[in-house]
Image 1 (spheres, rainbow, N blue to C red):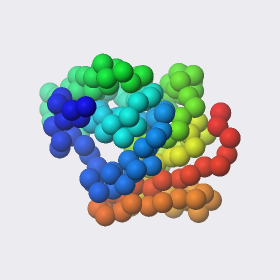
Image 2: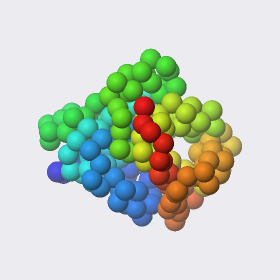
Image 3: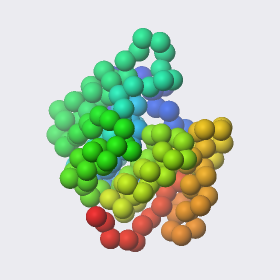
Image 4: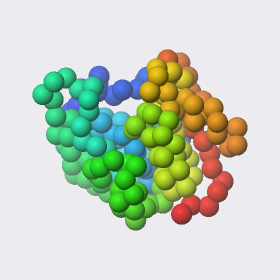
Length: 188
């Protein structure tokens, strides 16, 4: 799979070392949910680590941090279409992950072996994604567990609150960080 064909490597908004360590936990998963897929580059890399299976991307389809006039939905749609062409059961769910209609659509596609939360970075947004989607997956990863810019520190705050209640791993080399929780609770 050429995971760089449609989207330049700089479209992966992750630290390579942190992300590659997270991907070790994705290996062997047959179903993955990603909240906040942006350009689709992380979904491509997750799919490559999976090898085959179902990957569901939830995203607004817009990015306030993109260059003016750039439509991220085009890149994201192409990434999902490319994964389908490679025989993945890839789905794009467009909408706000906090919308109960979106939660129900995703619930119908679950449960998941792995969940990557990297969408709304406010505390309320990250908490909502954890509450709504966390029970759908055995392994849950959070991006930006050390990032502390006001308004974007939701993952950092929530991670600090919940990590000790679960077996967990932290991969921190940059000012961002990825934290992974291993859940024992039954999936719904």
